[in-house]
Amino acid sequence: MENKLTIYNTLSRKKELFEPINPPFVGLYVCGPTVYGDAHLGHARPAITFDLLFRYLKFIGYHVRYVRNITDVGHLVNDADEGEDKITKKARLEQLEPMEVVQFYTNRYHKNMEQLNTLPPSIEPHASGHIIEQQELIKQIIENGYAYESQGNIYFDVERYNQKYHYGKLSGRKIDELFANTRELSGQQEKRNPFDFALWKKATPEHIMRWPSPWGIGFPGWHLECSCMSQKYLGDTFDIHGGGLDLQFPHHECEIAQNVAAQGHESVKYWMHNNMVTINGQKMGKSLGNFITLDQLFAGDNNVLEQAYSPMTVRFFILQAHYRSPLDFSNEALKAAEKGYQRLIAAIAQLNRLKTSNENTVDVDTLKANCFEAMNDDLNTPILIAHLFDGVRMINSIAAGSEKINTENLETLKNLFHSFVFDILGLKGEDDSSASNQALGKVIDAMMNVRKTARANKDWATSDSIRDELKNAGIQIKDTKDGYEWSLE
Ligand code: ZN
Image 1 (tube, rainbow, N blue to C red):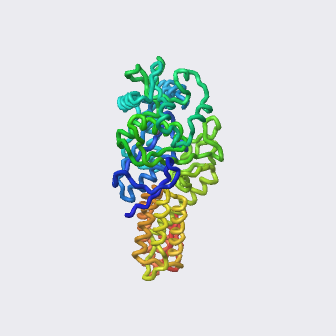
Image 2: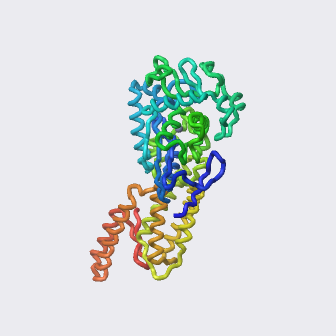
Image 3: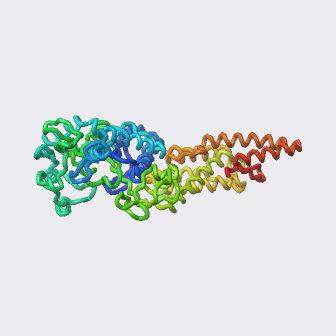
C-alpha cells in the first residue's frame, strides 16, 4: 500500500510524511511507567496512543520493533535530582525488597494494559538490567567533555553542551530562562549550574538500590536509561520516540543531549507526544483528591466516579480525542463514550446479519478512503470514528431496507469495520465479544428457521415456545418486512 502517513514531529513542530530510515523496518521507543504504584488514568493515554501507532504501522505493512521500558531505578521523587528514589521510598514504606515492589507493580501494570487491549511491546527492558551499558554511556560523555564528577556524582554539563549544540531544541526552552527558573535546592552546590542533571548519583548509606562504578557506589540518573536502552535495541538512529507531553522537558530534552554528547549526532527522527488527561478540568494529582487508578475506574470504586467504566469504554473515550489534544475526564463524557462504543459494537453485530441484494445504493469505497485519510492525518481518531459512525448509519439503513448493498460491497464493509475497529483502534466486544455475538446470531438464526417451519406447518405451540425461550434468555425478536431483528434486552 502506498504510504501516506503523516505524523506531527515535536522536533520540527509540523506534520511530516513518515519515511522510515530503513523500511520496511520501524524502530519505536516509548517511555514506560515508573513502577512504584498502581497504573492510573494518566498511564492509559500514552499506552493507548502508542498502541494505536504500533497497530497502524503494522497494519500498513511495516515491521515494527516496539520498545517500552520499565523504570525501576533512578526516578527520584523530585525532578531536580533531589529526594529519594521512588521505588526505594515505596520499598522502605512497605518493608519490601525494591525488586518486589517493581515486580508487584509491573504485574499489575501488565494486567491493566491487557484489560485495555494494548499489545505487549516487542521488548520491555528494565533500567536496573542495563547498569553496565549506562556506565559505558557515561564514560563516553565524560570522554567527550560534556560531563563532570563532583563528590561521587556525575553531572551533565548543560552550559558546555549548549556552546556547541542546542539544549532546549525539543521543548523550546532557552538556557537563560532556565537559569532564572531553577530553584536553589540543597546539594546543588555540587553542580556547576542548577540545571545540570545527574548521570550518576552517589548512594547515601540508606539507599538500597546501589551498584559499584568507577565513581563509587551509586545508581544511574533517570534520563540516562532511555538514551541507553533505545540505542541498545534500536541503534544509533531510529525512527520514532514517543511519550507523554509531561516528559518533553526535562526527560526527553536530556535524552537528546545525552545521545548527542555521546555520539555527536541525534538518534531520533520523529518525536511524538501525547497530551495530558485532566479530571473535571483539573490536573490529576493525589493532593487534589482526584487521583483515579485504572482498577478503581474499571470497578467504579472512587468518589469521583458515578459508576464503573469498562476498559473498552475507557479506550474508546481516549480514542475519541486526538492524541495531541487535551482530554478532560468527566462522568458525562465517559457515559457518552460508553453509549458510542456500544452503538459501534452493536452495528458490527448487525453488519454480520445484513442480507445482500443485486442492487447497490451505498458508497463503501469512499467510506474506506475516508477512514484511511483520517488515520494518515497524524492518527486523527476522532475523524476516523466520525466516519465509522457514517458506516453505522449505512448499516442501519441497509438493515431497515432503505438502502441496498451487493455481495462485493458487503465484504468490503465487513473488512473495513473489522480492520479499523478491532485491528487498528484495538477495540473488542466485552462480555458479548464479537465472536460469541456471531455464534449467538447463528444459533438464533437456526431457532428462527425452526420457528418458520413450525409456523408454515401451523404448529403454533412450537412457534410460541421458541419465542418464549428466546425471551427468557434475554433475547428480543422483532419481526420486520424482510425477516426479523434481534437484540439483547
Ligand atoms: Zn524515557
